[in-house]
Image (cartoon, rainbow, N blue to C red; front, side):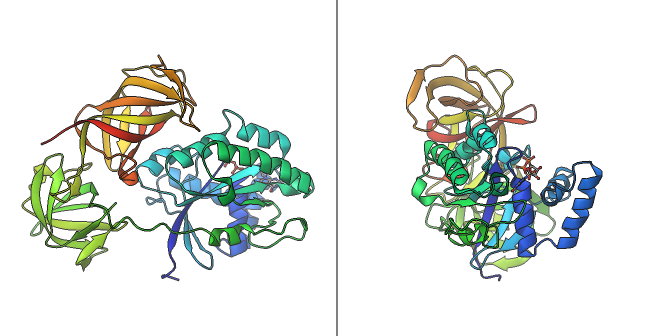
Length: 432
Ligand SMILES: Nc1nc2c(ncn2[C@@H]2O[C@H](COP(=O)(O)OP(=O)(O)OP(=O)(O)O)[C@@H](O)[C@H]2O)c(=O)[nH]1
């Protein structure tokens, strides 16, 4: 089991299309959550006067509550296995930190399930402008989630009819294609999260469907190769001072390989040093590679020269530091509209910095990238644009093309994620 490759899976979809019910039932059928727990949730659900219709959803919602109270610190809140992979279900959207977590890499998703209701009215609302299925599909594409599976849910509510599936599938396809996915690569699976059809067990209620179950479709996913061949980038999460050991930064190697004995540079300070030792889970290791969470010991770097948000790399290919950059953003949430000069807080990898959106260069069609308006005066929810951003201090950032892991960001204000974005070009570099 330990040898199976690991995938992070995110479940998305419009409110009430059945994300929690579908995944709750799926986990029960897999034996991850037992029947007694579900029955208990059913009883709880009855008490609320909603009958037991929320019994499966409660599995997921209870997990959500736990997270919101901060009990589960790491985002890995439910784990399960298919025959090929080991999965972690990560932050569901709707949770207020979902977008930020996805962007800062706290919960990078390898694949996503989009749950779309087969009930005509619900399909339409979810996929229409302003619908969450649309918003989520957009974000998944923008943030580089390459694999997506669409579960057409609530088939029991449409009498398991093929026509109903086809109608919902058509709308789903249109949506997924419009945000830029190749439709041939996206499986559409008719399911009932409530009854359990085609989740883990192949149903007999839809003889017209010869495709895969949700679980089988999970086995068709692929694990992307780790970016070990790229230059080293290790964003710093925290820096500890340990008596007798010295400065011990911790972080995750995003790209490349880091070796004990290697010369390194810390940006933006430009301080040069050497890796003395590397460890993970209290075990010393000679080297670490992309994806590894590590602590390490540095020679020649003073505490003042390294802090959270800094990035460590090779002196011959130092991490980039921007005074200003050009980005593509999508406005996700704002009560009115944003205008040039807006200064929210930018979150990228491990860094947080106030940043001014100085110029709106072009409003673009979010799906095609076609320019819709030059120098727009304001941007509102759903708008995509090419803008210039100036952090209040030089900040380590990379272009999304070169280092996707380091080239995406969220703009947050008043506790909400206002926009998500990717870095197109560094327009003004900072050199220490
Ligand atoms: N008939 C039928 N109802 C379903 C199905 N799946 C979910 N529902 C119902 O749809 C409602 C919403 O389900 P949830 O699972 O809470 O939906 P959700 O997408 O997780 O909603 P949020 O977490 O609030 O965004 C509940 O009343 C469920 O019982 C299904 O397959 N068939």
